[in-house]
Length: 101
Image (spheres, rainbow, N blue to C red):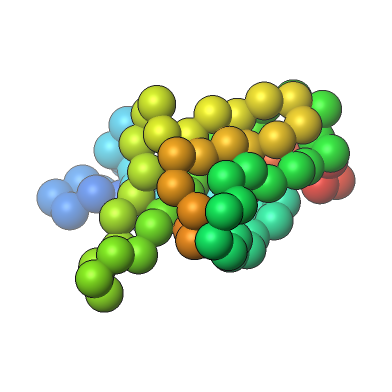
């Protein structure tokens, strides 16, 4: 790895000699970026996007003051929407880098 940028190693590993699997973060790796965030209301079970490919999305619901992350099968990402099994959710849609879409 190059000797510049930001690296954070796992506990017990020297950040100067750790390989990629022993790092928690390395700025030299392309990471997903946030495309959009938001909340939905009652009866809303999907959000549109214009990425043109199925994005990565995290969707959360709040029930009895507890936050639950929706899991595989409860969130479906298509080329133009993110669909989920619940309404009243908070969502984060990520894109793969570049200019935001």
